[in-house]
Length: 165
Image 1 (cartoon, rainbow, N blue to C red):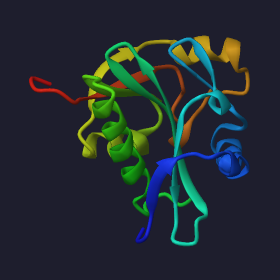
Image 2: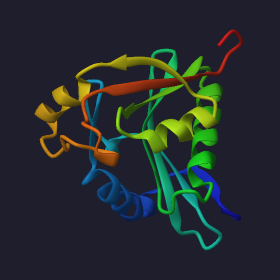
Image 3: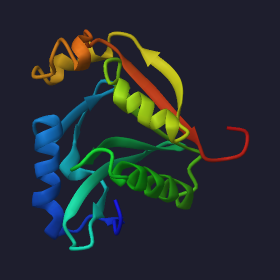
Image 4: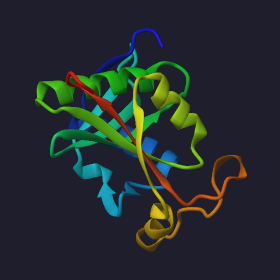
């Protein structure tokens, strides 16, 4: 997408960011690694187009030596918004002196797995049954995910930001 800029979210972006989260996650909550995250409370980067409209959002938080990407949503997949947001998050992590950026996706999300690996993230581990446990915190998580794949596990990916990674 030409003309996209990434910046920290402002109060006036809230409705647009919430709409993206509603579309992608069914509301402001995501569950990953046995934690229920309220996306409204997390630092968020937004991608805005030339007209200033929010076209993507990335919610994150610091976690020890890493910056966890909790949610990445683009209004139009394939337009470069996710790539720009992910690069900006890596810059935030480096600025904060963090050694890695990491995130969780699910075993059915082959599109996301492909996207993240193409941007340098590597599979760090698999948490078998994590999505089954997550349904206790968010019962609306489906049993069958993308492409008819049963949804059970979380895949943890990371990008090492320091030498030796």
